[in-house]
Amino acid sequence: SIEPFGKDYRFRDQIRDAGGSVMDNIAEGFDRGGKLEFINFLSYSKGSTGEVKSQLYRAMDVTYISKEKFDELYLQYDSLGGQIAGFFSYLNKALIKGEKFKNR
View (cartoon, rainbow, N blue to C red):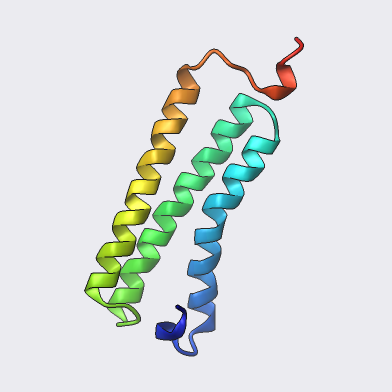
């Protein structure tokens, strides 16, 4: 729910956009078809999880969200960042090159 953010539309949009950027960068990197490009976009995606976590601190500081909600959301984004990092690490070690290099 966006109600806690009241009329702070800029902040609401900023945290929503950062959260959406996590998913968008994974999709864009995957669609590029190359392993190195995908890894690069995974890095952007992981950075966006950090941005959301920072914004969660700000939201709690100005009492837009409770400590309980902060803990719940922070844990989810921290876990997501770890999962992205694990996938990033796997791809760095994998021999696959990507869909666009399949026939080369």
